[in-house]
Length: 287
Image (cartoon, rainbow, N blue to C red; front, top):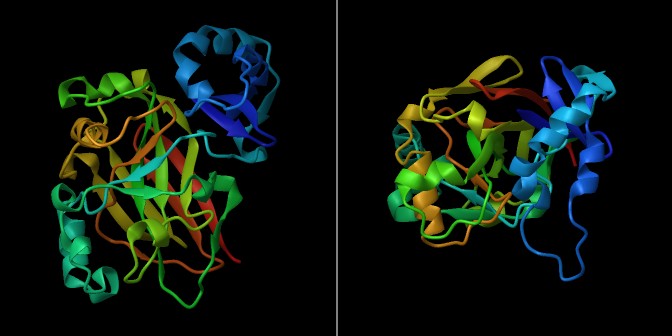
């Protein structure tokens, strides 16, 4: 199943090149009183809503994908976790380029040593909402990654059981200002976490360990790799993250970017794709 959020926070079921409007299913979410529980209520209940989504889709109005404004498929994650330097060739790339590491030793360590960084939820947008360059005097890079969306509460999960806690997958763009500051600052700018184009549920992608991914900018291929080259695979990343954090439904884990990162500027057009997940086009504009 491929589900998306589009236009004015409508819920859609993606089928081929069309979107079926199944927003009525959101009426089945429980009403809550303040303080609202952490996590994404729709992602938490997605397994129990699948039949309702399929039923609603049979009589739903449809639009072509090209006609809709795609938002992030996850509306309310409690956190976005980034896995830095999780491809060996990217680690080598960072270590040998002062424009990437800025003499910060933490930037030249593999994920085992550097750990995760957190991105502000306010940085999340969908592919139709554009990346807005905040500091045009600084180098800003694109980074394409497989994004993992957690489906249920997880704490101290073993790698062997980790995929049981995944709701689904989407493409993630981890946009990064280069500089000496902490990653969480430079990567948490508004619009610098792009998620999309939709959520592919975990049952459709049982093995995330052999997926081709790539991104081009203005038609020029920048990054191309396969998730089999991850230093820590998806199960190991979930085990690592859940040993430090309680993972909640809707939490997003950005699994790391391969070599080939490069600068973007207003007017650029990025096209990112991940095998069996999808493809999305994201425009870059000035602030």
